[in-house]
Length: 173
Image (cartoon, rainbow, N blue to C red; front, side, top):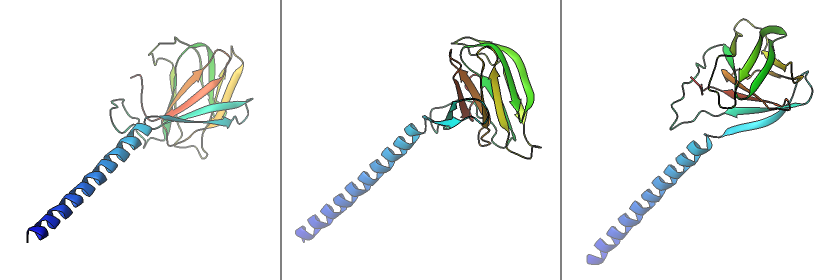
């Protein structure tokens, strides 16, 4: 009888250990997924009519530890925000219609969102194409908008290379 009780206890301990290992595995997988969701994915795409390629980044919404305000994904609109080191005249078009024509001056560490523009595409029959030009640098990009994202951050380097980041978070509010 003592042998039977010992076997029963050993089986229960083995089962408890297996359950604990399963729980640890689930926790580790959840952590891995949440950490990997903090990264920006990127790709190189070809411009539609401008010369060269454009780097496009996609912000993944972070599951934990993020207090940034979120954009309303139900809106049929997007907002363009210029980030980091702009000192030039910018023209922006949506479907070949001029929607922004201003001088944008933003320092490297600026957290200003003074120079932004938005566009509502609810009545458009086709997916919007955003074209942005730097007059001083003589460069531009034009891409089809990803309607799953409502905030578009723009970066430009000293050589006129553009980076477009699609996001659903407001960094600077």
